[in-house]
Image (cartoon, rainbow, N blue to C red; front, side, top):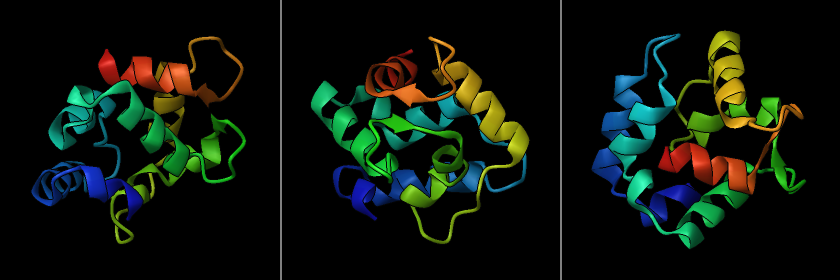
Length: 109
C-alpha cells in the first residue's frame, strides 16, 4: 500500500493487530503506533492524499470506513460506530468531512 512506504511494516502490523476486533479502533493509539504523529507536515499531506481516494480534497465518511485498508489490503473496514466517532473527532468545522488541516491536527493531537 502507498502509505506503507514511509512507515515501518512492523509498526503497521502491530497497529492493525491492536484494532483487529470490531469497535476496537482508537485513532490516537493507531497514529502513535504507526509513527504518524512524528511525521513531518509534508508526510501527513501525502498520507491525506492517499486516504482521499476520490481526490475531492476531503476525507468523507465512506473513505474513513476503509481507512485501515490504506495500510493493508486485508485489514477490516471500520464499523459504523468507529467511522462516526473518527469523523466526529476529525471534523472540527462540522461540515461532515475532514480537510487536510483537520487531518493534520487530529494526527498531532
